[in-house]
Image 1 (cartoon, each protein chain N blue to C red):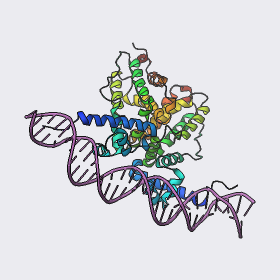
Image 2: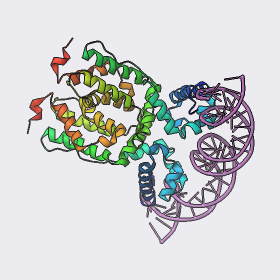
Image 3: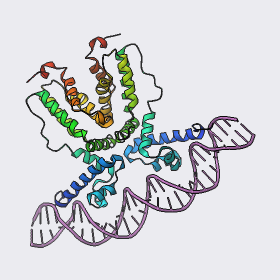
Image 4: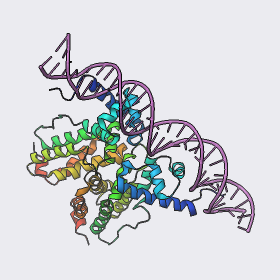
Length: 184
Length: 184
DNA sequence: AGCCTAACGCAACGAAAATTGCTTTAGGGG
DNA sequence: CCCCTAAAGCAATTTTCGTTGCGTTAGGCT
């Protein structure tokens, strides 16, 4: 039974809309983007966007969630500290790009009430890393000590984002469990 | 010389607009609020809002900043730990109210590009508390270990906000400096 | 109390966004 | 390869937003 057509033209439309949103959000900021504007940039009819996503906040959230998400492999070097730093560093690097930061801010605005949340994959990864740590720390510690400080700066103090931030946060997490910090 | 009329009718208008914004932001989320909508709810003419605030992001930011900001005194009990917990607890309690959380999300959306930022007063307070700590920690530590985790949960995981969060974060901050933790 | 004018209300307008009915295209199972 | 229909396109319409000019109300200083 034929249901949901995801390939071919539809896929192209979605891809074009995504790029258009990213361009426009970078150019004008998430607050000053409109659906007709996106449609024009994407070479797509506005109606298609309205029918697919409904409204703009919904769409922004969807697109903010999509990035950095797919089946990206987690770092696995053998050293827990190195893995964590690599992982945190990826996140910092990703959101250091103004596009992605702007999208995150847009996603933040429409998070909360709706369960849609563009960081849930990050939390899933935190769970994996916590499991791998032999109970040195819990996923919640990873969230509060590493993800939260990074995301806070991304949203409110983007110009203070540096690669060292990842190292500082990870070391703060590990300094409670020194035997793990010095492990191979 | 007659300048700036802040009392009487103007004050009433501002107050009514504020309440209207808070109601609507709670009901529909910061992204789905418009100025005409607010005006109607406030029983005020849209023109007045446009002329006073200019546009919506500006207004949301203004209102988000106003709350919890006025001349609120910082806790000063003599015990650093108690002060910090009281301070962090105030923040948690404030943003536990859905209105304030939604306003913060709205502010987050327009942060970054514009320098307007509804958490700058929080950072100023962090500076004061850090100075008071005899260099036990820096303002940045306070931000990354206490404010960031709280704000992260407010924005992305509001249903996980609990009073214990404040205690947990403060103790994490102080566990690096045990002599301070046990001070009177 | 009276004057000056800041700030609000009203109404009309232009522009842009959202909705709707219908037609056309093309995905994907048989 | 054909059929069925999901999804995109198109065009006309309706809604809503934001702006502007002008008259009215009332704050606050003298």
